[in-house]
Image (cartoon, rainbow, N blue to C red; front, top):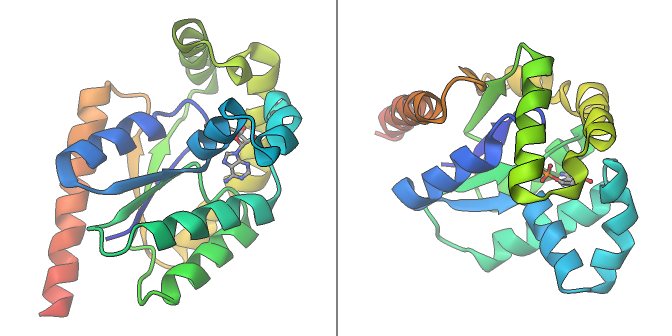
Length: 198
Ligand code: AMP
C-alpha cells in the first residue's frame, strides 16, 4: 500500500510517517529529508537547492521527481511507501502516478493532516525551530512556505479527491491521537484492498 502524508508545513507529516515506518515497515520517502541530506554532504545538488530552500520556495519538479524515482528503484518489494512532503505540485502528482503505474502500483491513500487554525500551526513550527534548529522555520520563511502550500500544494487535494483516495485527520490534535486515527484509517483501507483482491 502506498500512501501520501499530506498537509501544510508543521502539520506533523514527518512525525507520523516515521511512526508508520517503525510500526508497519513502510519506507518513508521525504524529499525534504533527501534535499537536506544533499546539502549536508555538500553535493552539487545540495548547492543548487540551498538558496531556494532557505527562502522557503519549492525546488524544481524535475529535481524532486528524479529523487523519488531513484528511491523507488532502490527499494523493490517493500510493503509500501509513505510519501512525505511529496508531491507538492500537480506535475509532481502526475509524475508519481506514472512512476507507480510503471510498477503496477498506485497511490492507495492520502491522509490529509487538516489544519484549521494557521496561527496555532505557526506557534507550533516556531517551537520546532527552537528545538531542532531548522533555519527554514523562521517566521518569515515559514510565512513563505505556507503561502506556497496554499498557492501550489493545497489544490492537490482536489486531484486526489477525484481519485477517491483522501481521508482527513485533525493535524493539530495530540500526536498520539493523530497516530491512532491514522492507524485506524490504514487498517480500514487495507481491509478494503484485501477484499477487492479476494
Ligand atoms: P519539507 O521538509 O518537506 O518541508 O521540505 C523542506 C524544503 O525542501 C521545502 O521548503 C522546499 O524548499 C524543498 N522541498 C521538499 N520537498 C519538495 C517538493 N516535493 N517539491 C519542491 N520542493 C520541495
